[in-house]
Length: 201
Image (cartoon, rainbow, N blue to C red; front, side, top):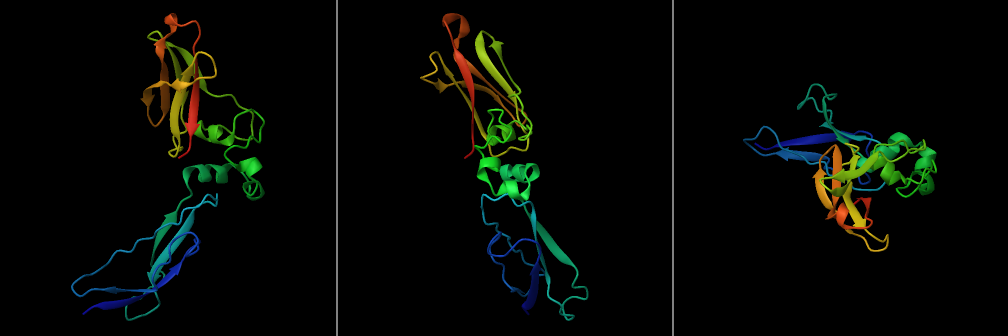
């Protein structure tokens, strides 16, 4: 026979705000011993920290003798929001001029998005940890990545006049580092410049 199972739903996440509402009960079809449920997060751009969803069998001694046994799922912030949550307090998180991606709270000319991408402290003046040199005759840019910044797109651009920029050639793009080079040999041009481009989809 099918088994009707009432559910208790709790945790720190808010149904309808942090995740799509779950049913208050499920029915396990005859011949099966379990069914699966999906907890579907609702995307936002808020830095709130991790939230939990706890699902258990409602107190019914015909089904379970220990209603304290629950399954818990953690809903995590997006990577950039998790970084913001770790680096700014609750008041700062409400002010995009302090904690927003384009803000520069330490006035080092590096916006938060770049500080995040390179794993720098947004409240302490820093310099980009990048190197520019020649590799096999090409102007080459190399930079270390924040391995947690999985939502960043890395690229580079080159120019000879600071007005017209074209894509650089990506050499390496791993979890830990990014390297790109010019498409023009350095000894064939009077001047060449390369810049890093960091974007968030």
